[in-house]
Length: 172
Image (cartoon, rainbow, N blue to C red; front, side, top):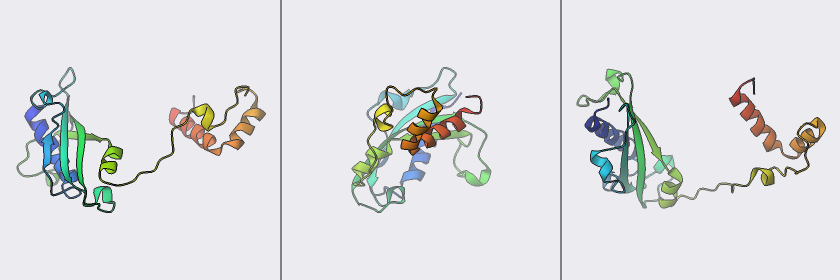
């Protein structure tokens, strides 16, 4: 069972260490006020082996994610799932910490943060599979020659299918 107060201290330390140099000169750490009831009673799983802490960090972009600083104010919202694990080695612990057995798994929507920081991110639009790979409705998946021709037209599809087969294993 995870002690809630320890979990909150662990998350505060984790987020502060991760963001204080990249986004200094702001309000820093706070519990996310979008879920004020979570501050005292955060969500957890049925056996209390995982706790969710919602948080906010405010600062000025001084080189977020090692990109050029924009000096714009940024608010990072995230959640951290806290779980238990073996204690970290003594040399990795702060002398005053009492939560070395806790692990923080931080989740942030970085695209929104980068946009707020004034950093442009270009991605390709999401397209329907059939449209992206120009799959014809009459393509017979059992006709090897037809499938090979379709793959030759779309080398990205072949790469994606190979990665999928590798991930699923030899029996797929």
